[in-house]
Image (tube, rainbow, N blue to C red):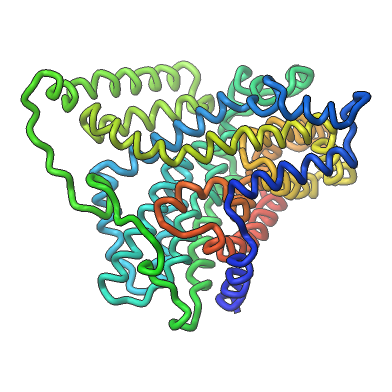
Length: 466
């Protein structure tokens, strides 16, 4: 039944889902029309107010540039770490383990989830590289392979990431300065910071994220089509087998450096000169403020330091970072569009109305669930965990406090809604699509079914956990 449902939805999605950039443009147009019809810009001209809100240099198109840079750095440092020799060896070893498409999808999904909890960029890249290598391995061994399902499994890190160590909403709330970046000034005095033990480290998150580690691989296993003749092997897709020095390709043989510049470029000592200070700076931050106050910048510091250390030379690290930066194109081009959507929805009052619609008549038990649902809807229009947290934080936190709900639980309710509909919104899948060679329409049918199962589990978690 589940495999038939997945195949049916996948066939529909293949016919209707366009490129992520097209989706961003269409969502911009839809938001503009809806906000003009039902919103109120508080000016004499609705159209003028719309254009001003959309193009504003501080709250419109360009309002999330700093946050976009953080997201790019997480992606780049995650890619660089994923392409180190240590991680490559692990990926190559795991790729030859699966003996079927079902087993391959479950294994890839589980590892992508584990890596995604560590860092969303690492989870995305490790999942993509592992999916690609598993596809080649199954083909090489003559095992029937439905590659789109395995590629979908590689995206599972984005189903759990917001409950992990790089979750932007909980991390942004660990310090007053971080909270001020995403919450309007008028709400700062009434909203306290939220330490990580009350959000990412809470019993709620341990139950929800721990359950998803089991549910996602299980659903992927069950989604495998029964009809082997319908399988689409990796040979059907235009998949790059890899570049030198990355998983899936022959190792690049380096020539021993002779000149002084070449020796400096490949020097492990030089690499240590930046890696060690980063580790020391991170350690001092933890000693002074505690693990509960680790934020996005500290996560980036750790990923950068570890990547440089494992690559063992500045040149090798920069080569890996340059390859990872190609995945930032979608972030750089589409992030301003989503910032513009966010600005139109906020300025017109639509965002507040949407959130308040779900929470107005909520009880203490149902409020987190409705908040999670509203966050999932918002994520379709603003696929940025930090961006949508900036919009929903005031209403979610204040409404929660009025009903006696812990701020940490409301933070995680928004986080869960955000990560859920990543399975429908293909924006963050752009790097995975580039690596695996599949299209968004090839995987969304499968990720949508996993999303439904995850929604049921998260709802149960929000009901039973404090």
